[in-house]
Length: 190
Image 1 (cartoon, rainbow, N blue to C red):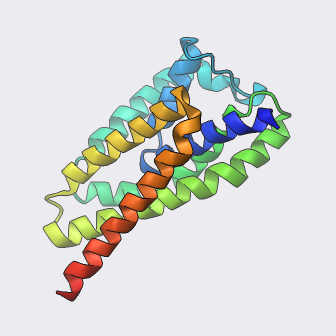
Image 2: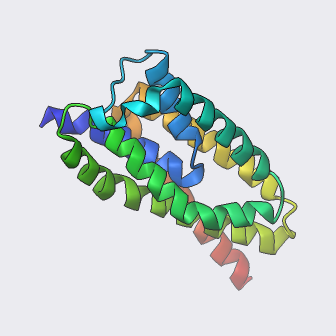
């Protein structure tokens, strides 16, 4: 059972972060494996993530994604696209995290854990972006984008360093999002 707990938490954290930024969590995982820090190993079918080619491609994709997401209205398009790419990245990250299990079992774990988690965070991000665009004409979107970048980075970092803190972190993020929804509802009724 212990072969499932830490990989499951690592995958859960990276999938949640992938729901906000598709490539950043995969880049962080790739760098950790490529440079052999944190003792992270990948499932044999996902070892390509630690290759130099993957590291370079993910670096470029991350820079493009983070930069494009600062542009109002382009960020909305990326957010909608992220509803597909985020869950795919969540599956890949979770699948890769299950290093000590059969690749087909790891793939199923990736689908079961990674896709729904990333989709939930991506959907919340899309809603936040829509509210920001509607209420500020897109002027606040770059600020929202930077906050999402930081949350994705911190979530990925915690998942990589201290996977046992992923559940409390995600609980806090869900509580924070719920409070934000409540605040928006109160503003609408006023």
